[in-house]
Length: 261
Length: 342
Image (cartoon, rainbow over all chains, first blue to last red; front, side, top):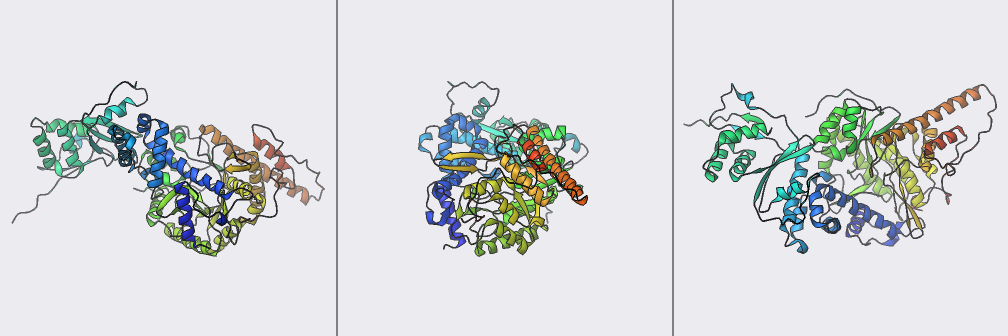
């Protein structure tokens, strides 16, 4: 008789590999064939995890056709099953997996769109903190380079492909031009959770660098200088106003410069 | 992060499983529902659903039902996941917490399904250790749910009911009796569903689950699939009647996870469960009065659930509830007693 751990490992591999490796002598199922019954577990695992991926990547499903998506999802599940039971975390590796699929090698926008959809899923599972307004700081001396803290759900994505245009074209109520050829056009996208949904905006490279620096805690001075380096006409005041107007600022911290000897 | 909620005790009546399509309607309509149950894993992040649940928790008593702890996992518990469960309990302060007698993690993979254990002393020691760890971490009793199964292990040395009874004795845990799971497993593995219920320690049963199942024909094999995708069928109402008759009223949950219908359908099923329980208890009181008066009772007319071709199967259960003694008329004929390894 196998030790329980060995038995469960064998059984798990049988369920995931979608073929019976477990010995028929180990199982009973009344008068039924135990291996036929084992396929119920295989089917449950595959179909429920596929449903998770379909829910997270709806635009990707439409880009590649649902049958093909289900085939790819099945392969992904077999090779990269979840490592934890919190399924909101399952699918992070799926966009990268799509890049390895030969059939999709001439359609890189599919994996890129999946990358955007994963960022949306992450944002939807992240806290939305109360936003601060500019007027909150009317009477506060913020010093030369305050730290501006942004919503934790903010995700910034840069792609060589027009991923936001593709994603927007596949939303409900949007007419999809099926004859449109998606062009290789870089897009920089900011997205964050707003209640039950996400807001997505297209940024130019200076604004993208500005928000990217702030998100990574590099401070206002660094963020502004990076943006200026990319775009000499970068308008810091407008960028700050937009940040507050978008509800992205959750706090402003005054940094105390280190004492010099 | 966590706030103080007023303690709301779960009543011995019916509640519904909270599903995301119903959340906004629950918040706006605030329908009369005895209590709510959530899947713990859906509330371990910080999405909008979590914020909505904090508002619902102020109105409804709450039960937290885990599906991913893998209590039967031979390699022990995922401590990170247990910590997440602890935080969910700390955040929402539920009145009941439950998990499954199953494993779902092995070889580094989470299978997103609940797999059966080999019921033997080795597994009992492992599950005992895991349940003790959970109860000491959460600082509360947890209820352990019986499983719906499609296979059993030939080398099991005891059946699932014996295993659960011993687990209760060793850990002090409670039990969650899933009546639909009993029917599914009893049919698929060919044992007596009522004998299973009767073998459980009645005092330990702190909650009951009701749900629908699918019937699939695979060659000559008719297999019941625990899909939680339809109304509670007559045969499950019949088993529920048997359980309530034995246990008395218990918090009872209507579960529905696939093809989730409009909210009113769930609320309607919960209402039927409450009415069936009330009917059973009323009849019991009547019988007690009659016995006290030492008057002979007229022989009741027995009704078969199988013959009850009505859109409201629970009506047949009402009729049958009046008919005593209890007869599990809808159950398929069984060969011998209940034994999971049979």
